[in-house]
Image (cartoon, rainbow, N blue to C red; front, top):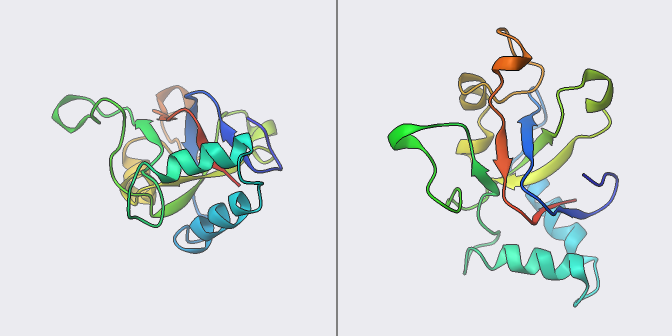
Length: 149
């Protein structure tokens, strides 16, 4: 990941949710919109953001950026990932390395289901909250070209 600047996750990476964070609705999604609006029209980052925005025509924000969430069976996500609209900016890490994680948290657009503290705990997707060990975490995977501020 690229940190400390507006960017796009160019590949589908595994992510773990931070927990006990500020309410992710409203302000975080607004921050994503504001940061990408600062980019010049026609720039690669702005084009990537506009393409994401177009995934949910008529909505304020694009679709949830979760490609897979580790759930199998009838509740598994369809091909192409989650089709719910983004409602929250989720704090995520791409590592379980405690020495690196505090430095590498980014905020990505997700639906309420994929950014639910209890739901993510139940599915084993919250970083730092793994009573059965890191090996039992089930990360979510993000879609390629996921924007982050």
